[in-house]
Image 1 (cartoon, rainbow, N blue to C red):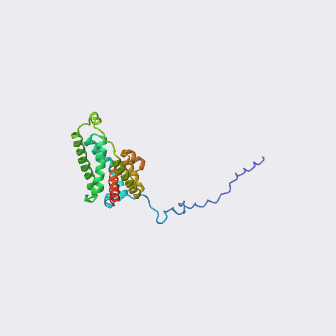
Image 2 (image 1 turned 60 degrees about the horizontal axis):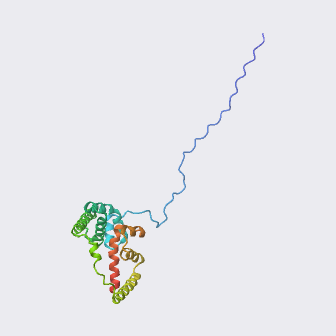
Image 3 (image 1 turned 180 degrees about the vertical axis):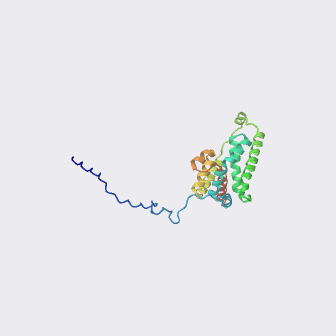
Length: 221
């Protein structure tokens, strides 16, 4: 009886050496980017006490920050009292002028919102009271008032005054002269001048008063 061939054992795949454990993933060793020495680290919030102190010293930037921060509060309060956009803007302007002139009287920064609210309410009530006392203008009667005209002496005096004012304006900073020309010389609305000059509308009234005092000092000198 023929012998059966012995079965061929299956070929075994050679065993591979186990791969070494991969080292743990480490964060990139590239250095972090840091600000250059002396470079600003970003805008720093100045607290109310610092802003009030700087405003007392005549710092226009600090004053503009206060105006921007509390403009909505002041205008809303003025509108509630006056019910008139024009009167509300006038009351707000007078309030900012009072703050610019009397910032030193505010003892604590926490009292500033209440001080502004009280001041603008008082200014609004004053405007409402004055508006109610004002009689309507009779345009027809006004047109009948004779106009004496400008005589030669008056014209010469006005020309000389204009020259003196122009010379004084040339001695002021350009920004101050531009603001006075727009608000006083051309009597343009505050909102338009604010947009054109890039200044908060609430700061224009105090700046106008301040620059007018400087102009008056130059004219008197």
